[in-house]
Length: 214
Image 1 (spheres, rainbow, N blue to C red):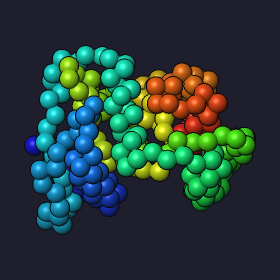
Image 2 (cartoon, rainbow, N blue to C red):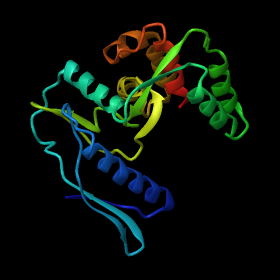
Image 3 (cartoon, helix red, strand yellow):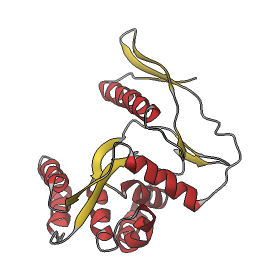
Image 4 (cartoon, rainbow, N blue to C red):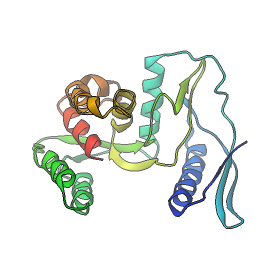
């Protein structure tokens, strides 16, 4: 097995969240995706632990964009997919979280990005996301897509966040000088990136802005 032991309060919350997510995924009837199974979980000597089954990550990788997109869509559909207007509950909650940030240019910039959205007539497909869907947390192998590190899985977010994250993070992580241009490029290319997830082209740039604020 592969064990995670939480040594801080934040890690404890993340380990507990991943445990619950893996149990949810085990009941979800997944066919395109293989997450770990929970072997054991709970408190141990005052620490939260999670022991999960190892994934066969040493299998040869078989890059296949269509199969990766199908697995991404399967994550989005865990718990079902609904629709809501752009100015609906998701945006309202995101505005509240931005407003709760410490005062400063970061908060002001995020709020301005949300204020610049044009919600009239724009609908969002709402589903779930892995929360850190990247090439280093997934492996496309011969018959499935392996995926691990589920501690930031969440429901109630616009469909497309995972696809945008997968595209942006390798180009921006640790590269402060390139991050702004990469983020702007994600917004520009959002219709192409999100088409496999059935996100309408007219909604895709707004979804990309919401992802960046999130």
